[in-house]
Length: 129
Image (cartoon, rainbow, N blue to C red):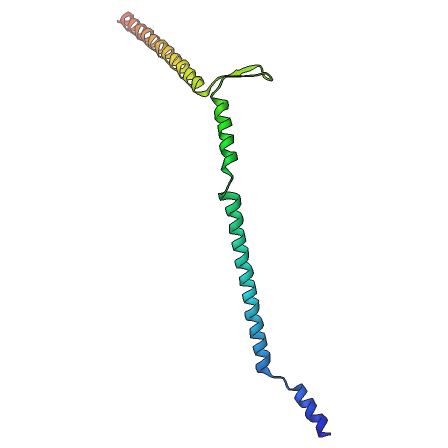
């Protein structure tokens, strides 16, 4: 009988040191796995950012810019709206000339108005005296 009691006692005896060591190693292993996964994710994220944002294919962008530049530097006719397109530089020069002419006319009319107002006020002052 002492045999069976000795076996049960050995079987039921828990080693706290072994349980603590297994728990500690599990925690450290889990920490390493989580840290490694985060590191891999951040490296993957940086590579994706570099590929999508920084390394934009410039050939297609340059071709698009050249097409746009050519479109604003030539004369053309738009059949759908029945309108003509002129180069932007020429349109800007014409607009500046038109605005300068309008301002000159405005300043002349303002000068004429102020002269007539001055003449009217002089006439009124003379008639009152």
